[in-house]
Length: 269
Image 1: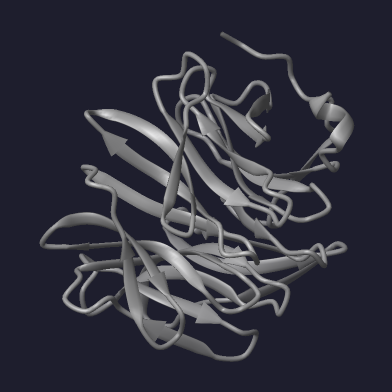
Image 2 (image 1 turned 60 degrees about the horizontal axis):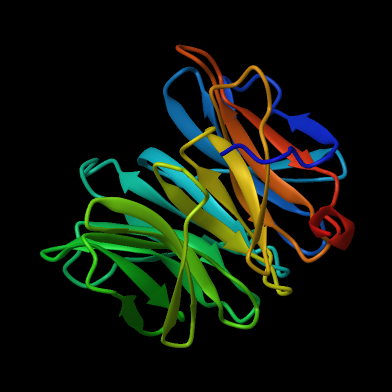
C-alpha cells in the first residue's frame, strides 16, 4: 500500500557542468558527499557545504563511487583501478590523502559508510559471494546471516549497522545492533533496502513498490518521492534529520542529487 508523502522541502543539488549527480552522505555539520559523471563516462567525487563544492578524484581509476561521510569529513567509497577495471578497491579520503584497502582475497571491496570512530561498513565479494564487511582501519570482519546476499550500507556512532540482504529470493532491509538482526520490510514492497541510520535510530532507504524513499522510525514508515523521476533513492541522514539522495530518470537522462528539510518527531505522530 502507498503511504502518505512526508511534507518535506526538497532542494535539488547538481554539480555544475556534470552529466549526472548522486549525493551519498551527510554529516552532522551539514557537509554532503557525492559523486558525479563528467564527459558522459568518468566519475569524480566532491563534498558540498553552504553552496561551495570541493572536488577530488582517485588517480588512475576506471570508475569511482563515493559513500558516506563522518564529522571529521572523512569520505569513503570504492573505485576500479586502471590496471584492472574488473575489481574494486575501497578507500577513505580525509581531505588530503587517500587510504586504500581491500578485503583479503576479495575481487570487490566496496566501502559505503563510516562513523565518527572510523568504523567503515560495506560489502566484499570473494569465493562465498557478496558478504557484509566491517573495517576498523586495522582489521576486517564480516556480517553474515545465512543469506544469499548481504551488504552493510550505513553505520551510526553507536555502532548500529543497516543494509540489505536477500533471504529465499526476498530482499529485505536490516538493522543490526550487536549480533541481533531486525529485518525491515516496507508494506507491500517487492524489495526494501536500508542505506543509512542516524544516532536516534532513524533509518532511510528505498522500497521497490512505489520506487520511493522511506524513513523508518520506531517501527513506523513514512515515504516520499520526487516527480517525475522513476525512482527516488535516499542514501544518508544526519542527526538533525536532513536527508540526502538522488533520483533516477525514466529512460536515458541525468540523475539529480537532492537534500531535504529535516524530518521531525511531528512527522511520525
